[in-house]
Image (cartoon, rainbow, N blue to C red):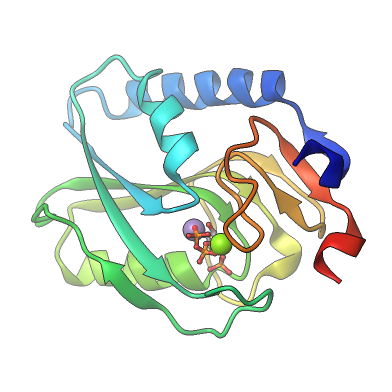
Length: 178
Ligand code: PRP
Ligand code: MN
Ligand code: MG
């Protein structure tokens, strides 16, 4: 686990502070809107769990699982719904909660889908943004950290399904994925 890291990019402490800050901003923005926070599985799970605890307002949560990468390192450009919401989003204020935006494929697909489903508003909060990877014209409304083009894992982000449970964001040693 930790021994597979080349470096720690964002510490546990930095993540905690940022999640608190984002939670407070979102709570203010959505205090009278009973928003639906949609966690994009699996990577968004740790961020979602911590974020909602920093929001002292009425809100609802739901989960979607989509796949774009599979176990590949490079995005196929395809998005497949593996698990859909249980909630009808018509008229709702939706906030997608993601661990990272890379190519933008996942969220541009989901944003379009939710507009089609007549959500009242659709916004995005992401812990990490990797602008160098972008292939779709999409930006998050709230970003925790903008990161360079490195292979990062931890706090939800995986490499072949491992490392999601690290409490920090680390850079994987190249020999692990080569
Ligand atoms: C990763 C990540 C984002 C998405 C970002 O998820 O958690 O959801 O890719 O990439 P994109 O901007 O290029 O679409 P992944 O599909 O690997 O599933 P996971 O969350 O289960 O790891
Ligand atoms: Mn994901
Ligand atoms: Mg993944």
